[in-house]
Image (tube, rainbow, N blue to C red; front, side):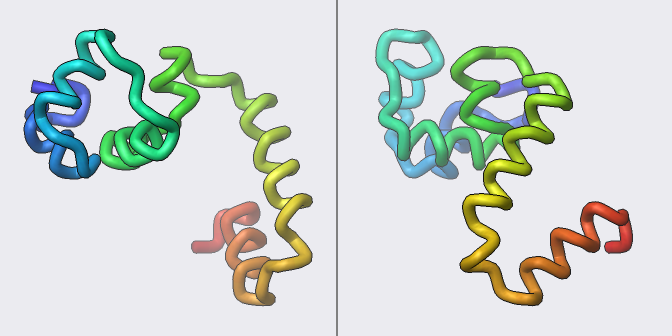
Amino acid sequence: MISARGMTQKELATKSEVTEAAMSHYIKGDRTPRASVLGRIAEALGTTTDYLLYGDATDSKEEIAYAKRLIARNVSGMSKEDKMSIMSILFDEE
């Protein structure tokens, strides 16, 4: 059982779109998943790929800096609704 999320290895494999055998190898550390698979595993577990790779959550200053870089990099392609959604999150108005 993947105890932190209350799901079985089989459920995690299904949600991550990999075989149960492959998931078993990833969990045991026998194999390393490709980036795309790692992303799906992180999403299924409700965490980040960084956490899966490094086992430690980044501190809030690093997370804020990362968020700023992502927003700055993508702001020109954002719709007004996307920008307003970010503002809403920042001002805790959701």
